[in-house]
Length: 177
Image (cartoon, rainbow, N blue to C red; front, side):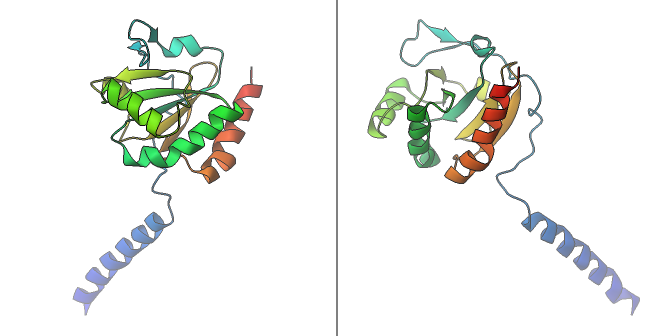
């Protein structure tokens, strides 16, 4: 009789863990970067390789770093929303073109209806993406005036996430000194 209690107990424990796991949002992967300074980099801009950009250039401003690529299917889903955000001027959106060819990136932007970014930097080898803990594209980081990462979105930004999380957070960060 005791031999049935052990497998039953193991099954119940596994069922409880599975039940807890099913209540979690799979897009909410814990990241050690929240609340920490954004990793520094200095990369060439897509439109002019002679010009560079660094997160230091954004000190004193709330901004969003969107990691994307022309080969990314999911990036197509969020692009219209990024264009809309840029037109409304919700915040400063900067692009990190990840492991992509510049001509492919420029063509992709033209095919998708335009460029929502204040500027785009090119991460040819993906090292900056690694520094930011990028799992895959698209990923988006909200960075505050002090250069601290305050939020990370894994996967395409949705309208619901924009209205319930991102815009309220951005408004709150803008009001802080």
